[in-house]
Image (cartoon, rainbow, N blue to C red; front, top):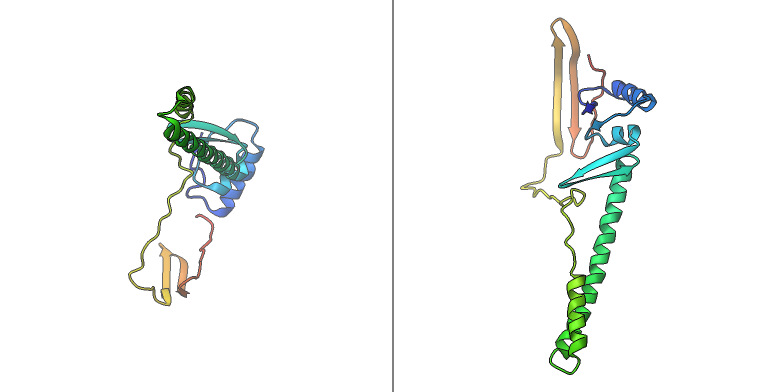
Length: 177
């Protein structure tokens, strides 16, 4: 049982762990938010989605794709069902008081049978979140000048200077320890 095994590991350690687990000849249960790790190591994904647990073959991305396709299929079927219900209700409204009472009764029963089942809540339908900017950010997002860091007598960074401008993406990589 591995609970968030990549937390606090540097990149070399994550790669070592992935290689080790890929070659491991046993069963594993891995709890992780690391999509790349799950795609690399897992052969099956058990998705806990509100009140259900469904297992999918493949990695995390395979599960997301399958789950999205299933949801899309259900939404399409519900749309077709709603269209059929609307047609039946139109027939019922038009001929409800007339001589076709047996047909109207059968159409009412069909409407009851076809009632659209609500889609279950799912964590696959991600909400769209937008943050309003009160004012545009400045050109320089962050600036360091002559930053130094040591652990006891061991200097790790000495006179580090950097400037990060808006839109740049920066990764600081290094080994643990």
